[in-house]
Image (cartoon, rainbow, N blue to C red; front, side, top):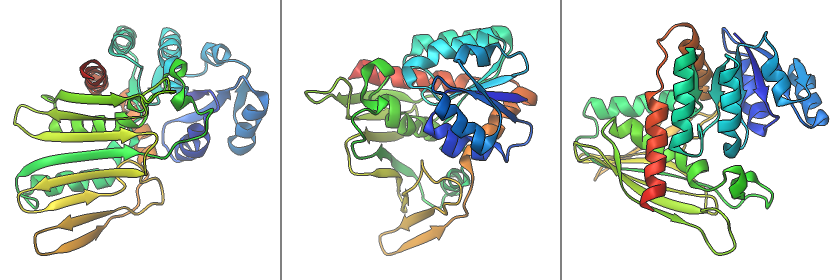
Length: 314
């Protein structure tokens, strides 16, 4: 599968292309850049062509799939063009900024028999599999509560995350991570029962927020997120026998050895885990959707539905 990239986003340069070089079945073709100097930076580091426009890359008949790491407000427009051109779509999160747009892209992909994938990489890190195993085998006892939090300090003034026109806002950026993790832990019957998004005076987007989700079994997840917060990137599983904490649940990149903290009423221990390449695994899942596994997009629809519920219940 020959893949091109729309735009010279930092995540594409720092994370995506290094992982892609290790991914079987996908070949990097080139990047589309409206700024020649940024495109040349990609070519010098990774080779490939530099296309002078997004449309030019999409029009290249030799390209089978396109990675879209553009600001969220541009995802629907360019995702639609990618699919209309008959190319598989690897979309950086969030898939779109609203449920209606997501449904349109998913319907188009289904009609054309194309694979789509939303790039929440943390789902494919081995630490999450370890946590699920500890829950399933009874190590923690009965689940009482999940807590998921992801936030970071204020970024530069020109960052797209604080620009409403570009699809900014804490929910669409860092909030999507705990939402997706809550879906993973609560399952298909998850629903939003409460949400709060805070937009301070002088800002055009929400800077921080919270939500509560629940499933039919009565399990509850408390979510918090923010873009003007002390850094936090954590899952806490509070159970009848113990509390399990994963302090790097979302951002344990290639080379990082995460650890889990297991607390009981009388003891605390640390479980050291192996490093893993979650970005690589996410790309492999995308490739499998194209080559091997029947194409499914229920997870993308559910994620977009939960995000929409949080917006509406606010």
